Image 1 (tube, rainbow, N blue to C red):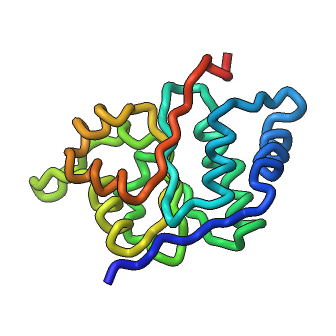
Image 2: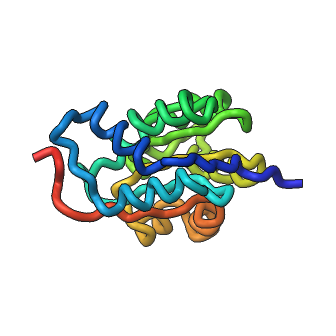
Length: 175
């Protein structure tokens, strides 16, 4: 029997996210329209993880790494493991169904070759997350077509079933 992904229902999610932005950036924090969608997800994730995609410099990592970690630990009292795409292969065994997992920059990691066998650690993580009810929070600069080309249609379909996609658009905030 498949486990259900953690249910998140955070009252005042938008205000908490705003405070998180001010904490991370200061008074110059800019509220982007997609942040409303992230707040909506925090208000009721409908038993799904989160996939934030779009070009670089739009606040995906800021929201999902710095701010979301504090929200999970302080407001939700949940473990939140943070990995970069390059760290996935070394930490698959650390990921268990009692924690939520954030992976930054999905799609930039190399394919792993183990005793001549090539495999994608991300594919294994998606399969395990679906089977075990693992809540994933992911960021990527790849669009859905590129994710499908990289990991295959089967994996993308599994991913689509367990996360809510949010497209980040607009100009680079780092400039």
